[in-house]
Length: 164
Image 1 (cartoon, rainbow, N blue to C red):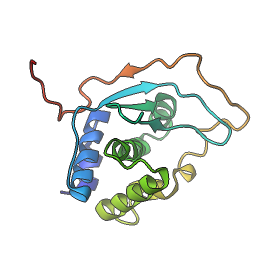
Image 2 (cartoon, rainbow, N blue to C red):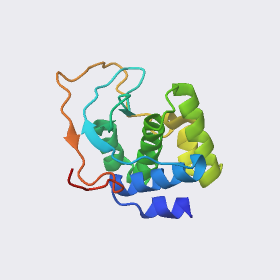
Image 3 (cartoon, helix red, strand yellow):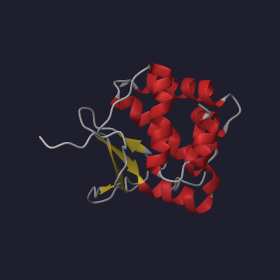
Image 4 (tube, rainbow, N blue to C red):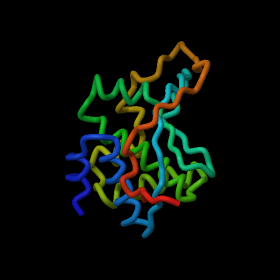
């Protein structure tokens, strides 16, 4: 599979997630279905922001829509690479890679293996801060009053539809 080409042709978060699932399947040998993606405003902190999170024991990835939208508006060429990186990280959490440091290392290892040392995906895995220095507002820390989740329809195409 030509992962750089597949990711380059991805048009939506669902398309990018399909590349993530294939990448993980090739690396660890298994996948999981039934995941949902929700977009939400997760706030800001002077030392950084939360790109996404996966509540352990659930089937939902919650992705911070503010940096996602800013990247899409200001650096659209980096959008699929950033989204791939964040979704890969959270998908690995959903598969049981709970330890944050081990998960980051696995993301980097998969990125190197499937995209090569010089690809933007790998460079983001090494340290995405250099790609997105203006995503954090240095003097502002805030959290939204409520966590409003916007579900992304058709996100996990591997879901099985059936009547129980």
